[in-house]
Length: 382
Image (tube, rainbow, N blue to C red):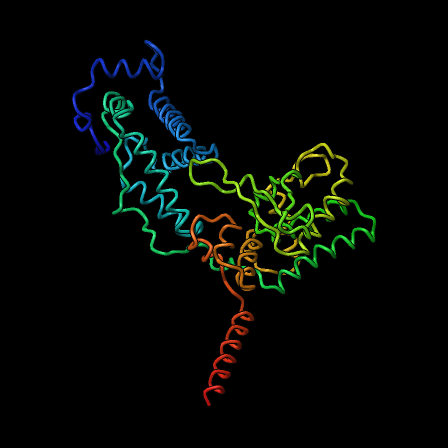
């Protein structure tokens, strides 16, 4: 017989009429499921999902938490009201070791979700402690706190292999895009139009420092004229309407100013010459599929992986490397740090700093300039 994690005495007074009323509210008056454990667990997950929706959390976030609660229940072979701290610790330890090797940030997110689930179960505004005490003789307990949770001690925990692309790597990537277009055209192969689109798409991703979702969700109407920079014509501003928001908030909007003339030229050529060839002018999306739909984030990932692998680049690189490169190159070209932060939509300067990894060439130029300045000053003194 398992040692109880908690009993009805921990929840207060013995369950009585309150238990029957709670069960009536959960399953209907006078209705009691035959498999009561499974029914209560399902009701818990449904209630937790409703609570999170009322906090305006994204459906993907809610679904992820529900799946995690099910995974832990299966791994522990116990219902949540029977969980012990060791069950959660074993689950996290298994994911941290071979063959999974989950990163600390991922595991910390799992712990945060589980802490939220248990917090919902022990909250006296909900009936779960009463129901579990009366039906099972156990009550759920909050099992995660600062003593057994992963501590966030490192400022930056991403994969160290992920970095900004060097200018040579970036040029090679764009050259590969152009080469594939030329090759398909020469052979008159199907897909040359898609290759033209993808080449322009990755150049725009870098040219305005966009995230994948921001790139995929762009509409033609998001391309605006900058009255202060008429040389960029109708592509002086890219309006991002689906930027990354804070937890529970709506997407964050921002206007990204065009910096490089070549990027404006690429975008203009795509809009005026390439996009009309798809034959779906009425569709609002900037990046169209051959069937008249909107390009997906998955498509962006897959096409980038093809280019990356074809060039023999590190498999750790993702389309986000283009955004890293944009931030790095703006810093190398002496753009103001506040301007860079606003361009990429970061809330804090420290976040933008994490993206920055100036190249060796840039540091050598900076060193040479500093030494030249010192030598000039010494010559003047001498």
